[in-house]
Each structure stands twice: as structure tokens, then as C-alpha cells.
Length: 421
Ligand SMILES: Cc1ncc(COP(=O)(O)O)c(C=O)c1O
Image (cartoon, rainbow, N blue to C red; front, side):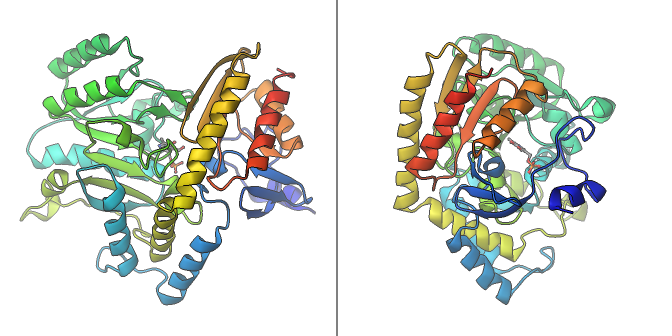
């Protein structure tokens, strides 16, 4: 039996209707931008395995640092102990995070980074003796699959069974350059009628919504409104963090900085899972008390895992190198050339780009998980490129180390795919 057949016996894959969708492809090796399957077929990973492996798969520099760490200290509880990798990571991260961030709290994945952020905001007010239980979020946002994260996510097509168990959320549209007055009026009416603790947002670009980009000035006005009304602001940079938008963080495009930031995915460059929820000193101070119960009693067993920390430190070092920054600039320029070429194609409805992220919307209607989407996915895989359309959006989010030649192959298969839709 090959891996594909053995997989079917005991495994249950995420985001999959096993009765309808094709079997999973068994990957046996990954290096740089290339994934290799059990039959020896190679695929360019054009979405960096869900935006994680930004420095390429099995990056030697990161592996070496993690391996050295593994031989020294593997895992130790982070509630009673501390260690150099966590301390160094916090120091290096705070240096590059948007201004105002002061404390680093460890989690396991993007959803739990968001979950901890939501709990921090709710408990911040609880500790101050103020009852605030509502959240504010964008329509069509995606923040993860745990209960708090599901609640604030506006993409709820698959959340039906859980709707009665979610926390209270008010939604606003994303700013588009012309609707900010309406949004501010809506916000005013929300604050008059509800007790809003925090506003969570994917800054500048909403990933799962189809890589949709919104207006930075409009977002800044919303954040200013929140600050004036003591609504804590939570930037979900799980997807956007660590250089993808052309700056270290998408929040760097916005003047008003968040109180809380959620990080994961490229944090450890795809080597091992880890996430962080960072916050300002003001938030942290609200948890300092003579009462034990005012502390933040939220913990995951692998909090601050030393190996994950060492991978994250190595990734931050790489991000700041001239080589990687030049590569990012090269990819941005290359996307611009492709954009100019493809945007007038009759099958293309619209295109957009920020940093290494490029997206185009097809003129054709495609269901999020439907036949045409599966056909497109197969079309790309058959031509050696891993791209995963979101509804009628085809997007690229390539590793920073992609070669010019590999990137041209990605563009080429997208152009060819336009002929089959
Ligand atoms: C913006 C954003 N937040 C949170 C998450 C959830 O992260 P995870 O899948 O690691 O739980 C994602 C995942 O795609 C995301 O894009």
C-alpha cells in the first residue's frame, strides 16, 4: 500500500469533506520552494504552505539553530521556569514589532494567539471592575477555529453548528476609501448601546476573505475612534506578520498602533508550531495585583518551547538580512510586471498586490469548495505548482527565496488556467 492508501485508514484531514473531495497527496520531502510527493512529482509551493515557510522549506540556517537548541534544552514548563531562547526571542521581537509592544505571551497556533488576545481584552476590563463583553470585528474576517476566534470571524459559512455558543460580536465593513463616515456612525451607535471590550482586525489585508485589501487611512480612523472610546485594539497579524506585506508587519502601514498583536505562521518559518500574543505595558499592568485571580490564568503545555523559540530567533535574523529584503523587493517588482500583464485578461475581474502577496479574481463564479475550485487545484498540481484558490480568487504568497525561474512558472500556470475557467 502506498501512503495515499494507508492515509485513508485512520486519518481525518482538516477542512475536508472526505465523502466528496479527492484523496490527499502524500508529500515525502520539502526543500526550498519544492514539495516532492511519494511518486517523485515536484510542486512549487506558491503559498508557502499556508504562509509559514517564508524562508523556504527545511531552511539550513533555521534547522541548524533548532538542532543546536535541541541538544541543549528540549522542553521545560514555562510557568515555573524561564530560559535563554524565550528571553532572546522576546528581546528580538520587541525590537521589530510596531511601537508600544512590551510583553510577549506564548501560544501554540494562530487561533490560540487570538483566543489569548480576546481573553486578555475581556479580563483587562474585568480586572478594572468594568463589565465589557462585546467585541467588534470586520465583516468577512478570519481569526481561527477556537470558540473566541470563531466568534470574531465573520466568515461563518462552516460555523453553523456552533452559532449558539459564540461570544457577542458587532461587525463593521472594511474601509474602502469612501465609507469611513458610515463606519464611524455605526461605531458611534455601537458604543452608545453596547459594552465593547476590543476591536480585532486583520490589518490592511484579509487573507481567508480572498486576500482583500482595505484602506489604511480608513483603518487608522477606526483605530483612533477605538482609542478615544477605550476599546482595546487587537491586530491579527497571524498571516501578515514577518515581511509578507513588504514591511515587517502590516501594522507598520498604519499610524495608530494596536494594543495587542497576534502572531504565528511565519514566526517559526514553518519548522515547528508556535504563536505569540504580544501587548502593551498598559495591558500587562492591569493583570498585576495582590489578588492571584487577577493574573492571566491561560496556559498551553508547550508555551515558550525552546526549540520553537530558537527557530523563531533564526527566522527573525534571516528576515533582517539584506538578501531576504532584496528578495522581497525583487518579488514585489516581479508581481507588478505580472499584474500589468494579466489585469486586462478577459477572464480576470480584478487584481491586487501588497508585498509578496498577489491575488486575482476570476470573472467566473467559483464556490469556495466546489467542482471548479477542485479542477483548478488539480490543474495547478498537474503542472507542478501548489496554488489553492479561495472561491474565485487565485492568490500567490511565495517564499522569499523563490527563484526568478520558479516564479515565472507560477505566473505561467495561472495564465494557462484562465483558459479552462
Ligand atoms: C489572520 C488569521 N488569524 C488566525 C488564523 C488561525 O491560525 P491557525 O490556523 O494557526 O489556528 C489564521 C489562519 O489562517 C489567519 O489567517
